[in-house]
Image 1: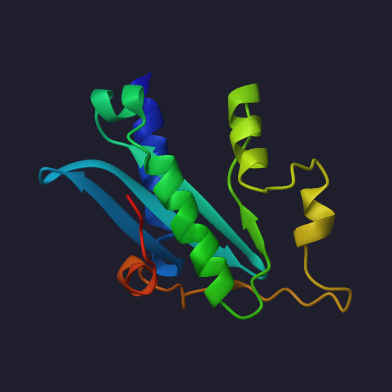
Image 2: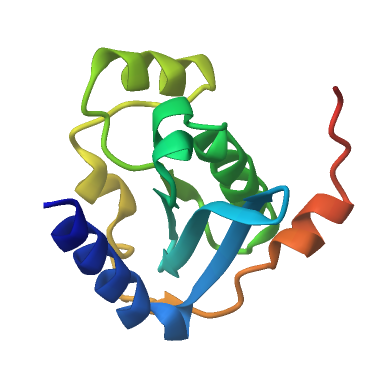
Length: 141
């Protein structure tokens, strides 16, 4: 089952490679997770994938850093006004998102769809690289 899920995620991410930015997160040189960012119209969608049992169990803050990068990317991209931070499948996830100021809604389609003129702005490939985002950001310990 895990292999099947991993393959589906891999092929979904691979299909978006033309219009996405990939970020790798390593600990002591080992890839522990990676994130994929895609922008369509005015919505940025962040997805993250853990690579080891340890990183899945401990989470290793991959969700958090992917979220921070996504918020910074939205702030730096003209015309991008929404961040889709993925499904809120449990109360813990919902609380974490609310803590960081996200509005939880089931009405996301009407918020994120093309403007009233019916223009669909398509996928964007001008997503800033993590290095560009992080060089302007000061992380405190």
